[in-house]
Every structure is written in structure tokens, then in C-alpha cells.
Amino acid sequence: MNLIIDDRQEVMEVSEELLQLLTKAMEASLKHEGWDPDFEVSLSLVNNEEIQDLNKNYRGKDYATDVLSFPMVDDDFPIGEEKLLGDIVISVEKALEQAEEYGHSFEREMSFLTVHSMFHLMGYDHEDEESEGKMRGKEEAVLKQIGQVRE
Image (cartoon, rainbow, N blue to C red; front, side, top):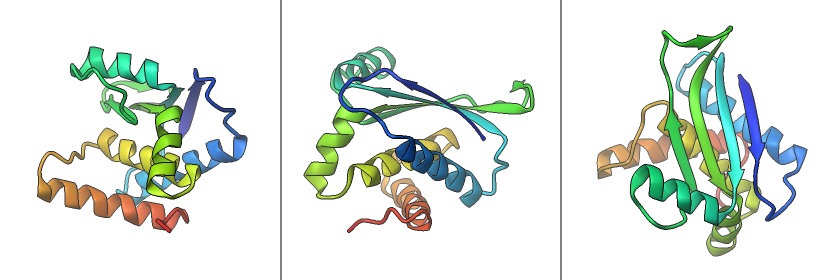
């Protein structure tokens, strides 16, 4: 897997350890679904203002959200030996807020948002109770595998 990181936020410095954890989360998500690991994913880390602008422009929702997913899976459009899976945009600011609100670590929240987005990139959604339950089960399995369970 090839991960392209664009850290555009100044809320906090993102450690190399966190980026390694997020890469592990992405790889574990692909493996959980039996997907080949030869995909390229871009990860943009932003603040609430930027993600609100993106959310408004792409989804018509004028509020800051935690994560946005932009799938690009297309077997006919490889880049070199890598295939584009898509783009993940995470508000580091919102992740910090939610980690505090939910009473778990920032690393756990960032891992959850990454795994959640990976499943969106692989075609899953949570538009109804059945699909939400299926997606949540997959997310929790991957988070457990990488040691990021709820405490």
C-alpha cells in the first residue's frame, strides 16, 4: 500500500508513530476484506474550518464533520503498479474533540476514523440499520486486530 500524507492543519503536530498506526489500520482494513494491498490512499489532515468547507462543497452540509471519504476504485485506472483507492480527509481538530467527548485516546479516535473511511472507500455505507451494523462489525474487528478497542 502506498500512503500519501498531506498535513494541512496546525492544531497539533502529528507524530510518526500515529502515522504508522494509521497505515497499519488501512492495511488491516484491506486485509480484513481480502483486498490486495496494492492500493494508493491519500490522507489529508485538516482543521474544522477546512473540513466544513469540503463538507459544504461536496455534500451540501454546512458543518464541520470528522472524516470525509472520496472513493476512486477503478481497476482500469492503475497508477504504475498501484491502484487508487481514494482520498481520506480527517479533521484532527474534530478527532481531538471527539476523543475527549467519548473518553478514549486520540490515537483510538484517529484509528476509528481511518478504518471507518477505509470501509467507505471499499464500498460500504451505513444508510440503514442493517448496513450500519455490518459496517460497524467490520470496523470493530479491524480496530481490535490493531489493538485500538474501546476502553
